[in-house]
Length: 358
Image (cartoon, rainbow, N blue to C red; front, side):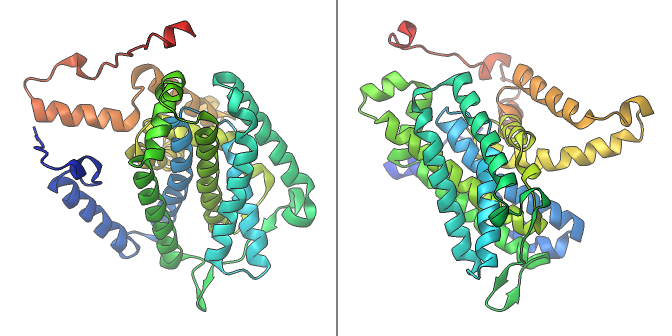
C-alpha cells in the first residue's frame, strides 16, 4: 500500500498526487492522442460520444455531486447549447467563438433557473427543473424561425482555418481538446475556494452559512457553470449528429445524464468518465443480448428503459459509490491483502447539532 509523506502544503492541491498518477495519466494521454490510428471508424465515433457526454456529465456532477443540487431537466441546457451553436455557425460565426457564446447563453439560462430554485431542495428542486425541461422542449418545438420546430435543424460541419473538421480524426481532436480543457477547469475549480464552498454547501447548508458562505451566490454560480458545460457539450453533440430536433432533448436524455453520474460515482471526476463509457457501451450490450432472449422479451418495447431503471436501482441499493467506488474497493483490497476488512468503506454520516434541528 502506498504511503505519501507530505513535506509541503502545495502537495495537498497537486493534481497528480504521486508518480503513479503521472505515469498512468501520461499513458492514457498517449493512447488518446494515438486513438485515430489505433481504433476503427466506428470505435472512434463511440469515443467521440463518450467525450461529449463526459463534458455534460462534468457539469451535472458539479451541480449534483459537489453542490448537492439535483436537476431532472439538464437536457434542456444541452439543447440550448446545441441550437445556439447551430444558429450561430449558420450565421457565419467561427466555430470556437460560437462554442463560447453557446456556453454563455446556456449559463444565462442556468442563472434564470437557479434563482427561483434557491429556496427549493430535494424533490421540490427536482420538480422545478423537470418543469423547466418541459418548457424548454416546448420552446424548441414552437420557435420555428430559430430551431426549425419539430422538423428539426441541420448543423453545418466544423470549419477551422479552411479545414473541414466535421468528421474523423479532426472532429475527434476537437472533442478531446474541449474535454481536456473542461476537465482541468473543473479540477482547478474544485481545489479553489469556490469549489470548497460548493462541497461545504453539499455537506451542510447550515454549517456553510455559519462559516460565512453566501448560499444564494454559490448555488446560482453552480447552476451557471453546470449549464455552461452542458451547453458546450450540446454544441459538440449538434456537430456530431449534424441534425437536431426537440425530441432529442427530452426527459429521457436528462435521465440518461443522471444515470451516468450516479452509476459512475457521485462526487468523483473519474466517475463521470466511467459513467459516460457505461452509458455508451450499455446499448451495444443490450443489442447483443437481445439475440439470445425469447422474442417476447427481446422484441418488447421499452426493454432499454427497463434495463436502465434496473441498473440504476441496483447501483443505488448495492453500490451507492458507483463504478469508481467499486474500483477503489478492489484497489484497496489488492493493496491491503490479507489485512482488508469488509466494513472499511461503510459510510458513517456525522450530524452536526444544528442538522438535527431541521
